[in-house]
Image: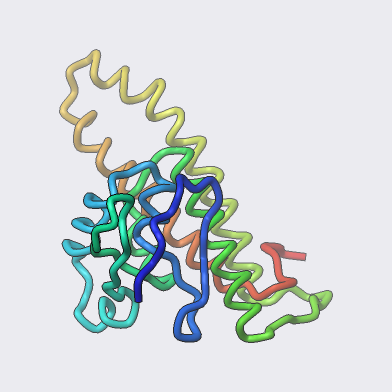
Length: 195
């Protein structure tokens, strides 16, 4: 399939191809302000199983501005999440949330799924609420770490500064992945809640 070269995107682009909601490596590069060739290299170097790769990434071609055929990838929501899990920063986080929301909307549209919200929260809604709260608290701890604790440890020349920095960063990346995973399991009409 030949894809058109995208202009600089400001909103996530998710489209239907072969009955699946997908996005392209070009759209990811544009929205996350990364070079497309670097996104392609990142996809090729992902440490996922061949089965996961085959199910979630499909190599395609597009015609660039010079009229030349170039490689690109289409990816499912799971492929997208796996790829961008390591992208950091507030802008990256906002785009991750926007993409996941758009994937969910498109998948619901494909399946015609909608649910009625009951008075009792589902386990998925409770789990999403709990991880959202945990992530909120973790962000507060991360701010204290970045602006107070780490500078204090560095001024003391403590070896803990370096060792803990990677632990905190890894913890934040994992918490964000779990949050997006649990929130993506909510069906249309569901929301994170405990009551």
